[in-house]
Image (tube, rainbow, N blue to C red; front, top):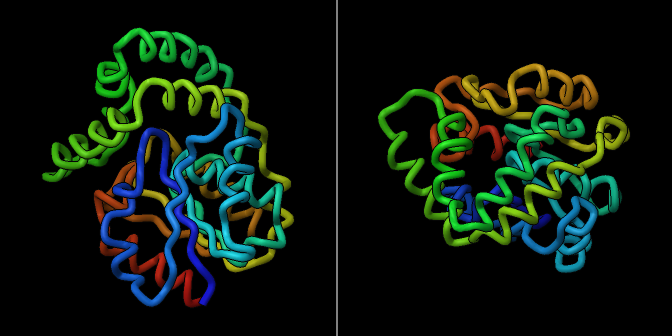
Length: 229
């Protein structure tokens, strides 16, 4: 059975995937944090250096962006691809302009306020578990620390467009998003689905940017279906 490589989003760790690894007890699950490098190419290269020869690949948010770079660098090693709440395109100029001030604040001791005030409020759909999910997000971010925030921010800022990478991929593919995702809205996912016409597009109705934590049951079901395709 092909191992599953999971890549979390920005300033997240394996906890982002909730109970998914436990539910896939018969399959080897490998957590691949995107922390070793300051460019997408470096982050992907570090993961590939430790990864099995062939694997199923799933990434959420920044993890999806790193997954696309892994696919660009080593397409023959990716058996199937799942992209969750992510963006295949280069950084917009508006977002690029925000990155350096956020990096400066984080490195000067304000990482918690950057995460709390500028990023996390845009992550979630309305729901009773918001506080629990946000607390977990903050714990993951603070555990990684400001240097990782700076590296990941620079990698996101300077990332390439991956439309051609997706267009070349012909394996089983899942494109999944939370209906209320404001960071990576529906047009981004429609675009990925069009680039990979063999893919399945799944919209999780009661979730925003983090469906694995906000609405795990339908998210896990979609991932299991993709793995069995």
